[in-house]
Length: 216
Ligand code: FEO
Image 1 (cartoon, helix red, strand yellow):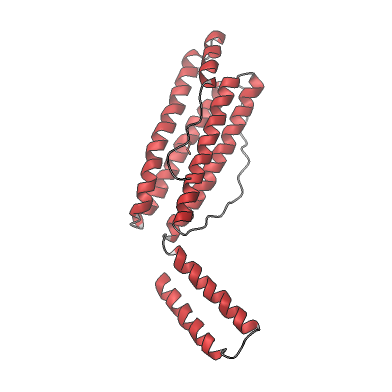
Image 2 (image 1 turned 120 degrees about the vertical axis):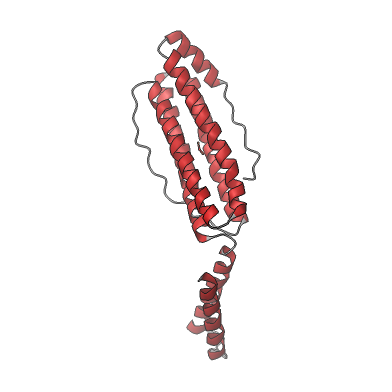
C-alpha cells in the first residue's frame, strides 16, 4: 500500500510540475517542493517498517523513564544515608540512558528519526529500604515484556536486522532481572540487621558504570 501511495504521489507531483511549468516562484512551486520532500522522507523511512520504527521509538521513551525512575530511587537512599544503594541506582540510571541511546543510534542508522516524547513523572513513594528494590525488580519484568513486544513486531515484519539488535536487549534484560532479583534477595535475607545493611551498602558503593560495546 505504501509503495502504491508513494507511486501515486510521484505521478501527481510530475503532473503538477508539468502544469506549473513556467512558474519560477509562487505557491504552486512551493507546494510542489513540499510534496517532493514528503515523498523523499517516506522513501527513506521505508528502510524500516513503520510499526518497528514506532515501537522502538516508544521503547526509547521507556528506557529514559527507567533512567528517571532509578534516579528517584537513588534520591530515596541518599535521604536514608545509604550512599552505596544510591550509587547502585545512579549507575543503573546510566545503564538505562545507554539502552535508550543504542536504540536511537540504531533508528538513525536506519534512516528513521525518532521523536523524543515527554517523560512521565515517577510517582512512587517509599518508607522501607527494601521497597525501591522490589519496585525495580517489577519494573525490569515490565521492561522485559516490552522488549519481547518489540521483538514480536520485528518478527511479524520479517525485520531480521532489528531482531538481531533485540537479541542483545533480550540477553541484557535477563541480566537486569537477575541483578535486581539478587539485590532483592540479599536485602530480604540480611537487610534487617544494621551491620549487614552497612556491609551491603559498602558493596553497592563499588558498582561502576561499564558502557556497553554497542554503537551509541
Ligand atoms: Fe533498560 Fe533496565 O532495562
